[in-house]
Length: 480
Image 1: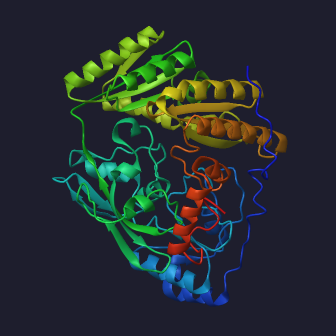
Image 2: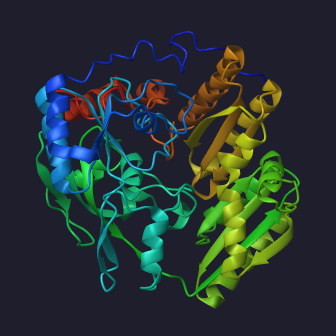
């Protein structure tokens, strides 16, 4: 068994944000201007501020100084303009489901909540596009699309807002077939740090017109602009859908099945790995009766004939690797039950250790290196003795560990961070990335220079300086 990595003594503890907290009080003049402009849409109530000062990360940061609830693009323009005039930070807020500290007010300032901007502005079924405001949630969008025979495939698990999913370049369980937010965002309306409204992209499926500002903004984590409209690519509901679970004698056998499936070009729609430890937690939380062994949860989309062919191919591959107990779910109710259990894995894990916090991390590696990266990482966490959960969108080489720690036990938190560092650096050495879909936020800042290099980081800083010269948009994230 591998032993945990040595502590990283070159950087401060990942949860110690004291060096990054440069908070400033809200100027009285700005407070008065916000009250006058926004009235009941402006709040300094502690409960409201605390709600907007916490995400699913392990960081404890004082809440923002105030919250503004935007309801229109003009609200966003006016909030940005007032913040810029007084040099006060502004942090976009959607559903609050991020896991890397993206929305934390490390420099104080105002949380700009766009959740009330939740209108579906247009659905163009004939073009397979939809335009929405940023506060629309994934489930809300799919409920509206369902009546048109369409769906939006990006599924990060949480009922995240579309704006937040754009900001973190989210992906999730369907990414192996349908791609990530980068692949499915066609156009944006963005309010810049100067309070200007800029439109990037069009509803056309492609363009060669100038710099690709849409791709620049997608994944910028609220540091370059604030989304007020998003135009998305959507897809027809498949004629046939079938989900299956398959149990394996080991994680290695499950992973090798996935690798062969992808290398053969089987167009599987979803392919999720859940380790035995996590299956046990899910059973306890969701009252399911899944066999407590490493499991692949798969889904196939297409015509009835193509779905059957895909499923038979994968089942044959799985059998070669000891896969057994194939169980099929063809009705919507059965599929929903399976995927709900998977999406509840985070909550199942946290509830398995009352009072714990989950240090959640994700990496992504080339599919050929998936087994090498994943299996060593499992050995390390098993040797550490720290409770954990493991799930993965392994069809595209992406997987997630959650280390369940006592937040009051500094030694345990430090050992979990050592595991995280070892995992991330292993992925980077294998030509992978420090984050496949969570984003950088606060938690992954130390790894971005190792992955991208200082020259690329300088280019990112130059873009930030050009678009936000006074550093008011979500400062202290991605890089110092």
